[in-house]
Image (tube, rainbow, N blue to C red; front, side, top):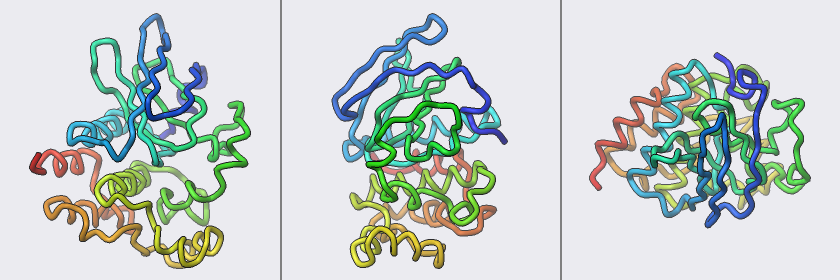
Length: 233
């Protein structure tokens, strides 16, 4: 399974500053699309589902997103109002849009995976605080092959932020600092990013599966979407 950037090398970019209240219009293949900023803490049930719907679409194209992470969500909609893909970053400086109706949120701090794409000085500002927490355990030491299962781990960390209102591994990094916190996650990959008791009861089993160290035990994006849809409004 490929990552989207390598499958769509001719990426067009639109600048986006200040994720929370920004709308930027871009034209891709003669079609106008709107990049809308949205704070993750304001996520509604429909937008939570939209995060997952985007990943369902990407995985259905035999692609991996690879770079899901969060403090703010970015939603791509077309001119008819249809949600296409949600991704996230707190350090959003450029939005890369491919030639289809899929928007990619490519993190500058993960730039080594995207050779040839010009990055900005945000790379030096981001540090490790938005990196390892969203990376699946099987990728932390090796930076190996990205899979849909790795996307699912990152997506579960993102949704955990929405439901718990706390940053992933907040206590760990508070106690140990950024560097020792990262080292702890390398040594103990089964460390939970959140107190899952704060997640709704109906969603908790699916979230617990999505955060498993063993990739084969994680649910698919479609299974997670069904679990979200079953939650009371």
